[in-house]
Length: 242
Image 1 (cartoon, rainbow, N blue to C red):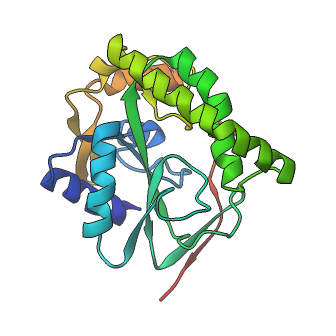
Image 2: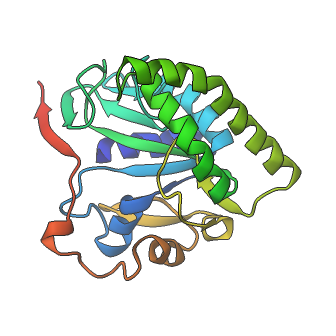
């Protein structure tokens, strides 16, 4: 994962794309100067316009041992965020069936945009649910048909929300529509920009401008180590190949 992050950071710097360590990865950088010892993922985030540009660049410039993966590269990919995966490993997640071509160790890339949290939460109930069911990630045939009927309406709601935000710009940031992550939090743009460097596993990456405010919002007293029963991992099995 660190190798993938180093490569993505290099590409972002080359093309002047602002990104930042997100969520638990930012927490790990501040509290542990690297990985949270029991955590097994890396998250970064970029603004939506940069996300679309970065997607095209990564498809072209990643080394052969890494693969970009999102809804445009695999029909059964069930998420609205992207991944960059290692091609010489297998990272088995219990909630995702073995229907994806690329299943290696990965980092997540989350698209961020300005918007209204309550509006996004309402839209995600329809948009995110329909998207996942259309990808056959969950549900039965009846749910798939219902999602098929709901999808045009859900897409229209996203378009209307973005147009409304164009007319009356929001001051807060939200994760891309269809990503339920942190829907209840008001993420202030001034806490993220301009991004600043932070050490993570003896390498310098980019972090939010005010990581203290961001991490307090997400975790409260974030320097407090959680008890063992609250230490969550993502993978059920990890395999490496020669």
